[in-house]
Each structure stands twice: as C-alpha cells, then as structure tokens.
Length: 450
Ligand code: SF4
Image (cartoon, rainbow, N blue to C red; front, side):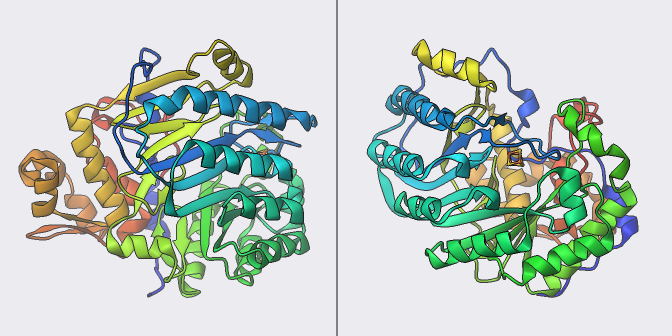
C-alpha cells in the first residue's frame, strides 16, 4: 500500500467536532424513557461485551467508566452480578442465536484473578451457544498480566489481545501516572504470542501530555519492533469537566498544531511500515482479518470501534455496558451501586436507550457503508434499503461539492467512493448523511474529528 501523505492545512480545515459513529444516532440521543423489559430478540449472530470496571490505580489520562480499588474481592462479587444479569437477559435472546464474538473491556480485565477469568469463560459457555469460530478479545494491562492469567484466558477461549501500551517514553508515562517499561511490554507480548493468541493489537494514544514529535516517533518505532497485527492509535480526549484528575497536566498538553503533526506522523510511519489504514484509529497488517474485512465488505462499527462481523446483535453486560440489538440501543447503569441494586431487585439494570426509526435505519446503513466499505453502490444499497438511494439522499449527495473538490471522495455514475485521503476525514463525510446534526449545535457535544 502507498504511504498516505496528508497536509497540515487539510488536517486543520477538517478538525471539527463530530460524532464517532459507534452508533447512529449517537448515544447523546438515548433517553431514560426507553423500556426494554418485554423485548424478545429474534435469532441473530451474537457479539457479547463484558465491562470489567476495576483498576488498581488511576491513570491520569483515562476517560473510561471504571472503579479504582485495592480490594481484590470486588472481582468475585462482580462475577456474581454478571451471572444474575445474564440470567435475567437470557430469556430475551433467541435460543438458536450463536455467539461469534466476545470482548472483555474495562477497566482492567486483568485485574481479575486466573480462576475468575476461567469462571467468566465458563459462564459464557454455559449460557450461550458458541459458533465454530469465535473471535474472543480481551484488553490487557501489561502491569497486571501474569503467565497464570494468560493461561486462564486461553482456557476461557480468548484468542485476541489488545495490549495497552499508550506511550513508551518515561517522561510521558510519569505525567500520566502509568509507568511500564519496554521490557514489561515485551514480556507481555511474548507471553501472549507463545500461548497461542492469534492476534495481538497495540493500543497507543497521541496527544498525551509531554509528548513531542521525537518521543512519539520513538514510541512508534519501539512498538513496530514487536510487529503487532493491528494498531489502535487513539486521540487523547481531554474532558476535565468529567475527569477532574486530567487537570493535573493541562500545562503539558501538546497544542492542537502539534497534536495534528503527531497524527500525520503516525499515519505516514505506519503506512510506510506496510500497515493498512482501516479508518479513524485503526491500522492492520494486510493479511489481518480487519484488513480482509475491509476488502470483502464485512467490516462494521460498534461501541468497541471497528469490528470484523456484520449484522450481529451486540449484547453488553456489566456496569455502563451498551447493547445494540433488534434495532434498539440500550445502556446499563453507570454506577456500580445502582447496577448492583437493580439486579438485587431482579430488575434489568438498564438506565437509558433508543428505538431506531425507519429513517435512522436507512441512514445508519449509509453511514456504515461509508465508514466501513469506503464505497456506496447506489443500486445495491437501494435494493438493500428498499428506497431509491440517490433520490432519498438527494440533498445529502448535493452537499458534497467541497469534499469532492478537496479530494476526499469521488461521485461516480454508480456510486460514491471515499479516496485514501478521505479515510482520514471519514467522520466528516459521514456527518453529511446525519439527519440530526443540522438541528444541533455540534460544538461541546462531540470530540474533535482529528
Ligand atoms: S487501567 Fe485502563 S481503565 Fe484503568 S485507569 Fe488506567 S486507562 Fe483507565
């Protein structure tokens, strides 16, 4: 693949606030009036997500919904509640629905003890039929990984790992309060590889305090030595009004110009090294399942970012987890106490949700095609959606002149094609098909698109 070149002027021009389209409409439209109690979901391939919220210490850049505790007994108690939640929700899910994907996120899944990780695998196996091949991923914190935990994860059926590397520079690590040596990262990677994990992803973050172009280049080079199958390179989200501990390093944050140069550097370095730029934060080796899914049109976006499975119902379990099933989105209680209290009262711990309208479903598919296939075939999407695509989206298609002139896309006779440059600004293209944005003041609601 050709390295992608991007100018700072373009990054500047298109760095606007916008949704990340892990859902459509975005989660800001979910309401507490939503009820899921009487639902029965039809048979569908299943993707299961388990939110494991505990962390031993607080990393200062973190925006996750987590619970910091030194009390190791918390994890066993939490598994008990996951079991209660599964028992309540299982009757809603058609019995012949097979699981094709499982993901453990957090928090820190490796906070859990080996026996608890095995117990979690058992809980999944006992309650849901598994497909012949299951893509089972887990987020790994190198600081709490042990050989016993890796063995337990393998036993529980996990075969994909996302290693939380973030940045290898000691100064940056001190500022964000997450110190982990390159030797520790190397040991974790080796443990996972030798235990038979099929895919190891490295998670990095650009825009962290104390980062410079040379420190981040070094982080990329340090990471490339391990030849991960995928990279997820996230933009640091500064939200001190929600996470006040982020204020501690405000004076050390890179300015917007430097942050953009870090992104530019990342794209050039990784595409030069042979990785395929999947879109937004993701890069993959050309023979990786994610790059193959991009080529064969089965890539999908959900709350974990890009996914290789299309047309699945996502069921999220645990505190704050989000589900997307049967055309509905719903989210669990975001506080541990209220999550436990609902389950103690034998109620579903759901706090808010949204039922998609017909227009939402049509626009959701159009946005997914743009973000995942990078192409819209008017005839086939018209047939799939039961509308004349060019007529339905007449105004949206007419609004693309400036993006076409800047080389982000091409409008062809039979369809709309996103260019390699357009992948960088994929949210900007998707936003033109979002019916809600016209009515909203975007600023302050969404993160920057770069
Ligand atoms: S371990 Fe992960 S979830 Fe926990 S504080 Fe650090 S970044 Fe946040």
